[in-house]
Amino acid sequence: MLIAGGGPAGASAALALRRQGATVVVADPGRRQEWKPGESLSAQAGPLLDGLGVLDRVTSGPHTRCSGNDSAWGESLLTGTHALLDPLGPGWHLDRLRFDRALLQAARDAGARQRHGQVRSVERLTGHWRITLGEETILARYVIDATGASASVARRIGAQVRRDDRLVALAARLPSGAVHRDLPRTSLVESVPFGWWYTAPLPGGTALVMAMTDADVAARHALHRPEVWWRELTATTHVRARLRLRGTSTPPPVELRIVRASTSSACPAAGSGWATVGDAATASDPIAARGITTALATGISAADAVRADADGVDRPLLRYAEQVEAVHTEYLLARTVCYGIERRWDTPFWTRRRVEPGARPRLPAGHRTE
Image (cartoon, rainbow, N blue to C red; front, side, top):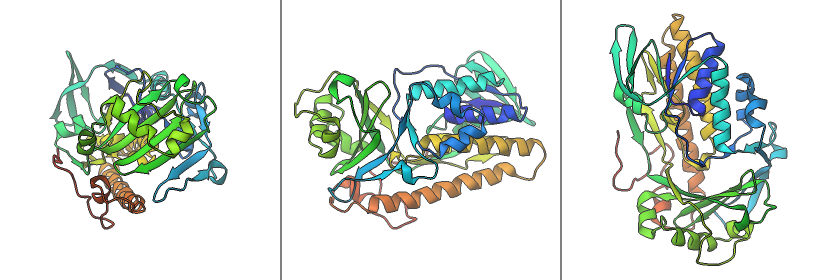
């Protein structure tokens, strides 16, 4: 069994397969940036991590509890939901790199073997795959693609990736000296004409701030320029007040990172001898706050499907692919409803998302199926 990718989706699949006694190799480049956006973990992930036997291990350390979510969406008034009303309790604000490392280390401790490198080629032979990792060749009965939204392995096999938009996140981690040290332990979303802003406290007194918009809108507004990004940030109402920012045109010394955050899905999500997991299977808009939870859930479900297929059960991988498609379709409907709430602006970002439930959004130039 080869798993391409050592993020939460790949690590959870490896853990689930090792608990079933499978031989697992995780191919992971091993390169990690200093920090990574995507720090919120829903309380719904708790039972999944607990089922893998790693809940306390991967949520201990510097991570802090998330006590709720606030938003100014569809109106200027700020409203919120509190974790006390959630039967599962609070979620977490993560040191994301530490969380990812802990989950992958748990998979290694469970017996998964790690290879540093990317999959260079995949060839289907009788009953197994021949995979090239740099100078190394591995033979495996099954391949799981956990390479993220690129789904690079699945596309080599013949799957297509349907991209529904060109959403990007322009993210920065504000240092502790640039924000108030006693930030509320809640996430905050505020919609604006070009898209929306998101902020959440991070362990260590820093804060993540992201501007979400389409790639062409970001280019038109020059949001990739730190001084423009900062000017737009200080023009917000609730995010600025939450962070207690001063209205200055000079940003603090931050690294502004542009990350693809588009909605996409693999078509199909699995086939004979292979499956996609995490963003490779179904990547969602960050407004859904489901990325890590979906990564864990698909990793576990794909592992179960692979195990069932190895045991001779009839078409479990096909059923897994159908399940992923159904989940993605349900997400698209929910996204339409969510964006339909905001009617204050007739700007390209918002008008593209005003579609009938079940229909695809209008896309900016450059959309493609890969």
